[in-house]
Amino acid sequence: MMILDKHPDAEALIFDLDGTLSDSLPVHIATWYTVCEHYQCQFDPSIIEEMTGMPTIEFAHRIIRDNGLKGVDPEEMVRMKQQTFWNSIDKLRPHESVISLVHQYHGKIPLTVGTGASRTSAELQLKALKIYDLFDAIVTADDVTEHKPLPQTFLKCAELVKISPNKCHVYEDGVLGMQAAQSAGMFLTDVRPFLKN
Image (cartoon, rainbow, N blue to C red; front, side, top):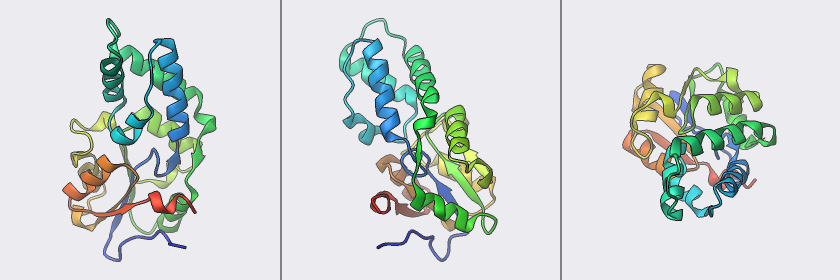
């Protein structure tokens, strides 16, 4: 069995949230189905894997485009998606193998969250998972202008805890987030093989 750990040279850890700390994918998919039922359109779950890490508004634009929806306000779709997700927050499950790493290094080195989720969604999830207080900084979609796969989210995490990017270790499940970590020059672990244990 592989053990999840940090790089020996890492001085700060940065965790993606959805799919890394939080097993939120089933809840997100169910939420999008509910939203698309309301808009009488189709939801293709394969876009989740393709677009993981992007802000919700990008998903809304994609769904509207793919379904040829006319006169649908993407902002309104996002509000409905977020509210439906927040109402389902009790269905979230933790990814224990990743969260155990958070507990292992809490108080020893800085820990941050770098997520494409909104501030409200990130805080609700972290509180539901009872790990909100373990992080020194949280960078959300609301805090940056350039989202994953660009490195701004992770670079801002490093800046907030005053650790050089090349001494930060990122834990990710999304391809776009992995590209962002590599662009930032950080150590990177793809957590997906560890989530099946």
